[in-house]
Length: 323
Image (cartoon, rainbow, N blue to C red; front, side, top):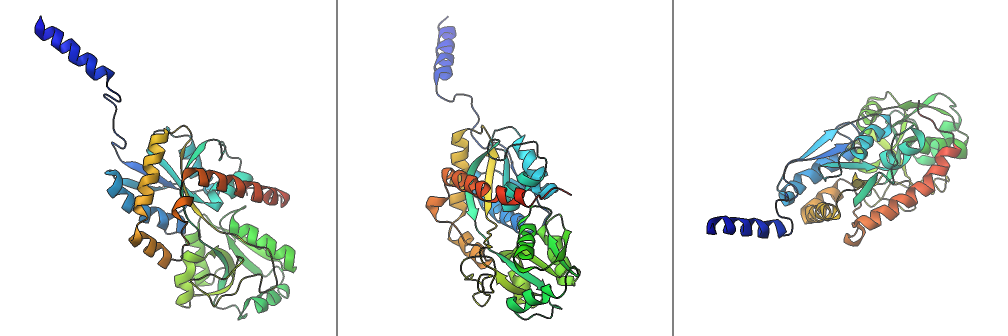
């Protein structure tokens, strides 16, 4: 009888203990969904981050590429996933701003995802194949005007930063060129290097090695100031086309409803991952990294909403639709 009473008492104590029987997060592998093909800037960021988060979390962090529809297929998979912290969405301006305004998505990018952290910023610049006769941005803009509808410009689908950049250039210079859509940045860069397309507004960090090796030309940075990694390249403002400023930031999200303690642990893992070695590596790749106080979920949520409020009216005014 005493043994029975002791067993009942122990069970009661254990049952009353906070979190008794609950699994400690994470207890199994975590998947980071990259909505673009392997080899692109978002994929590169994800793999660098996953490698370092694994040590902090004590579980494998698997990168899975789910491509298509401007990144909206991959984002949609995470938006519909269980809110348990095991499905993460990494993306950029294209997947988390542009796609929602262009494609008939089945999720609300603001309501169905919860922010984890703002990871990095990467400027966009105007690049071209080496065979182009123009030696600088002003010469390029003049050359484009004299070759209407004979120039091709790579994009990562309708509504992408590359697409908006091309439309902006056409509207503000009178130039006309044909858009060539790609499923991701990596295949577009390959065709640009091979001379299959003429121009692209591309993420600078990912194409900087090709510029340094002479495989492509860099004409102008789409920012208010010159880029520290390539200070010899002028801004597009300096070339006479003002106001086209786009940054392809990298962000991390989870499905809406993910417990706050799980989000906090993921955020801590990211902060831990962003040690001096990772910061140095990303800086060498050309990324601009946010200060620690900007990496909290609340800052990402406010930043993301502001980007949508800024760009969605512009995208919709241009009547951009999925092809």
